[in-house]
Image 1 (cartoon, one colour):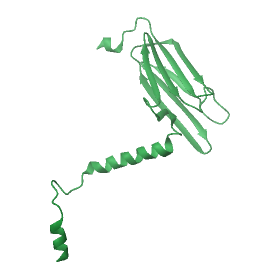
Image 2 (tube, helix red, strand yellow):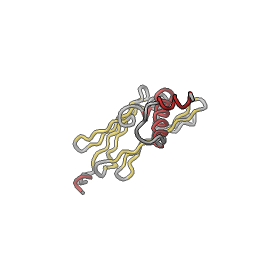
Image 3 (cartoon, helix red, strand yellow):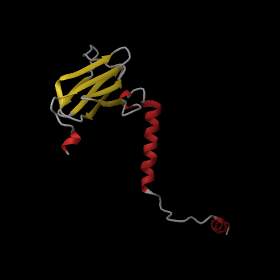
Image 4 (cartoon, one colour):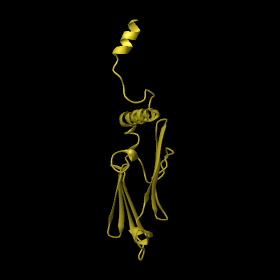
Length: 151
């Protein structure tokens, strides 16, 4: 039959003809990354390039965090927006915020491990509302050992 001839002429594949179950997840991951790249990047500034939209560095006894978060505020507005919130919890720096645009609300929270115990009296937060630049400087508590030194 014609079907038999067609099947006979097909190249022989090596390996299993069963689908790889992980391919489904790989395709989904690529699909959702594409959605974020094309539709969500402007709405999720904290998830853009770099280390989730933030850059960190340690210089001497200071941990510095930089980020670009346009459209947020450091104080509660009349629109129901929550301001940016920066706090130190133990050896972790936490940055969170939310804002509303029309019927859409965007919120985020990011945590950054600190290399040593911070000095809560010497945490400086600067936010530029014009360009959305965030700078956080956390000083090391005097006498605090580095995390690596404890291990």
